[in-house]
Length: 383
Image 1: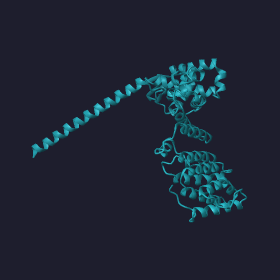
Image 2: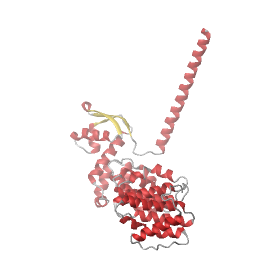
Image 3: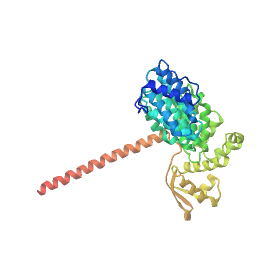
Image 4: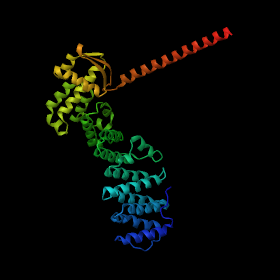
């Protein structure tokens, strides 16, 4: 480790002072030295939560940082179990104020660990938990990419990834960050294979429900490629997802009329589902259209004549469709729209467009070089 030493005395002397301190706080610990400092530290960490009784939280921070400085100077196999025990103790801080202190101390410990240390995961896991409890998750989690970069030199096992993603999902949801929580859940489901997809059955269901329920999530086709979601094929929850990915309003209405109790049992609101399906239905209508009449929208989306303009304003606000309302003509002019699904044919079309763009760029470049050469030749002739 590379961390400042908070007490400029030997490890043995530090252990002796900490033993005496905790003994004075009523902790069950002997003041006598052990043969090995690691054994001393093991006993000290076992009672370190006695420091939580201090009235001044800065005193608590000082004591805990003293333990961090000792951990920084320990080596060997025992140091890993000591770090794990210390992290678990701090993760159980009894109040938000002490939680913030423990968060700072654990963050110092995490930053002190070598990038190749396998203990980074365990410390970071408890940091995420403390960040959630104290409302300070943003200090230790800024996104999936940053988190992955923390463990480039110590790749996490699949079990560790799943454990961390589950906690992140729980903490993000609790803090009201539903979009970020959804992204983490997709990452979690992506760690499962065909062989163990059944283990994530409940998480796959929660992911589908949360995605349908989220008023700002409209593109759900990526969920269908996840192994745990594929495992649900043939079940009602999978059928409902397919409706939100591929079908139009009438398909959802038919499903709801036949499975009303199921939909309600999922905790989904029918009116919210109708709103989303109306928007998705219009997106599908607009995929290959430049103009759509108000009458066609009214019939397809099942809304009244006086509701069309308000509905179109709501569509445009989602930024999924770019369009202009020509009220006098009873038309909406579509300039672009997001595709609800992006399949092989769409990838092929994109490849063709990019290839054509590349060819056009080369053509322009050749023509510019020809013009430039002609200008140079003309200048030489004048000279």
